[in-house]
Image 1 (cartoon, rainbow, N blue to C red):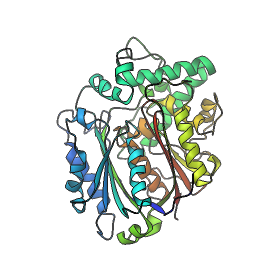
Image 2: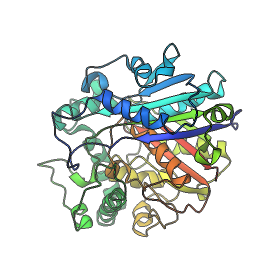
Image 3: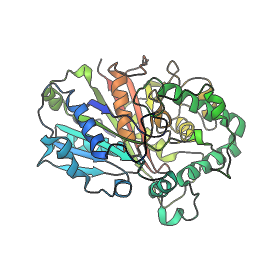
Length: 411
């Protein structure tokens, strides 16, 4: 892949509280409507821009608003939350849990095509509108529903990743893997405790590792994985601006308050086909390879990582897919502390999907906002990156729709 023909910047990111069980203010049935979340995030983005030049285009991402909210035609809400978009081109994007990554890539293409200099990107999901078991059926739309749902587990997507965990246990050993999954949960919550907007910010459990080691109970949930291996049901919204160099100048924001997007790798798997090897995230590996080649970097150049840990096992598998750990050695990489804030590759310092929360359509954009805050020294859980490069991986479905974005600090 060739380098971009124009410089791309991400700026003015804003994330609402990711709401759900674990937040003391969460009261099912009496929470704000999705319009309020969208208004909050759009206002949070706009107030960061010294000038108000007006956006050229809008992108909005949501996975299943048509079922969770009975609301479609989402582009119509962009002028509502960003009035300068009235009469401008606006587009809705959907790619299951990878919706956010696709929204970022869609915005980037408009900048590169020179049809926009300032593109506003919003993404959201409201999943607490129904009980989790019913929501599991809605989220099953991220797989090949007509083929897989009837035979799948009642908790459908946890069941799919439990199959990956079971295959990994059989091939590489259950004990060491379970220990690493528990460590993943512990790290996610400890990181989230630094982030006031995280769903698990108020988690005060004293022995997180022991909770993570809870034996799975297939009679009550699913085999191989426990509740702590799973991201929670979440509501929330996030927004960011993708800009050209000219667009950045129009906002009046200084470059050191933005980050540069230097590569985007996209890969699509065949949703009608089961994974050839359940212990491998092959589509993720391809997307990362594309992004690294475009950026002319290796994983050793990456100083911060935000990856898609919808389940703890997907986090371990992603470490192997990106090549920082060899097949079967993801647990060792985790247990040796390399993903910690002072490790070789600080990972998911926001808490990730397990700690910060996972409003499915919003997570990919939230990852970019967190990289922006890390590299502009405004993060709640601030690291000192050893390199100026960061990476996010936004994954939809069972490793089917994947976007990898590489960014560079401008400080």
